[in-house]
Length: 156
Image 1 (cartoon, rainbow, N blue to C red):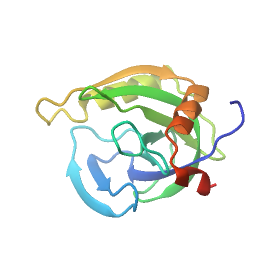
Image 2: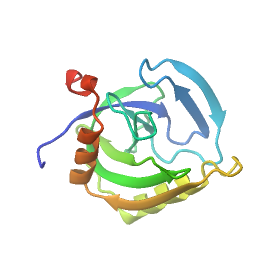
Image 3: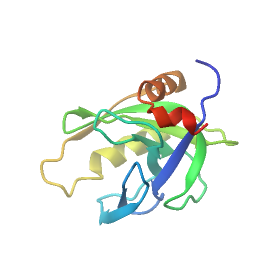
């Protein structure tokens, strides 16, 4: 699994914004936006052509300092996987970098992401969300492959 796996990420939410945008994850059509309790630390969206356990696409943080706007589709490479559990359901996050960039998932990045996910929905009563372990790029790639739709390979 050491070969590069490139994924297409639809950026739903810009870094620095405390608006959570909702899109139809299959058509990419904008649906609504709501305020959240924390600003996104990195561009956040989903991997096109996948389906997670919760029925949505696999969630993805793009680890970059670049300013990436909402509704941007970008080619990325997975660099890690952050376990996350939302209301008792597995809702792991792919950690990726734009093609041509490199990044390590440092302890600082891990702490930033954990603080964000544990507080982003603080305004929603009884919302249960917790971070788990940070896993390798190899584990991220295996997770993506296990959740790929028929359309995932057509996107290549």
